[in-house]
Length: 222
Image (cartoon, rainbow, N blue to C red; front, side, top):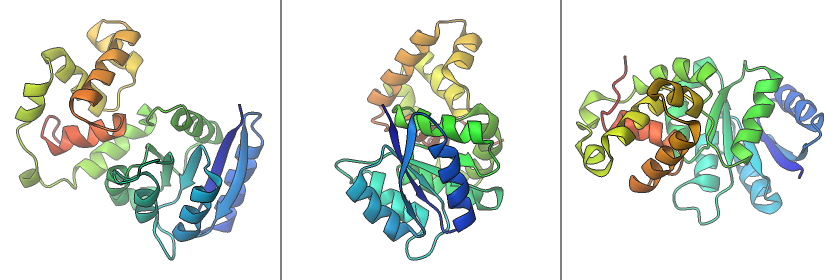
């Protein structure tokens, strides 16, 4: 199966680099390029790529608004979006995740990391790569005002104690294997717990679960 990728970035050099990387993979093909968010949304709706690699700051329509139109809560048939950002744009990451992005990555990621991210998102998983989560989670979590979070009681009522443990570890950026090691349980068991957490709390994916954990106060910014 060949993964169809749409690249949306206002910098021609970045687009060229991404296209070169993706087209060099045996299981990927770039079906289109867009230099602004509006063109990206239009192309995505027409071409239905498996993954849209989306920049944040673009003309006409920014990446967050474009992500909302493609993958937001109101979208009946969402398209998977991987937001790629830079350190000086990390304040937009939280908004991008709320807009429906399946994951995020830094623009200083290596080509193998970028390729792996696209495959992860295309497979229906959310990208919270441990290598970048620790740096980014702290940054965007600090922007959640303490007054806006609760004591996490709603989650505590909905989840079992072990599910709460898994959610807290997930929110720190741990992978399923890392959570399994920390709790001394199997990775498949962790996967089952994560699935139950998402269902019980009506969350889209792991990324949404991280946002939820910070918003409800289950995890506090350090």
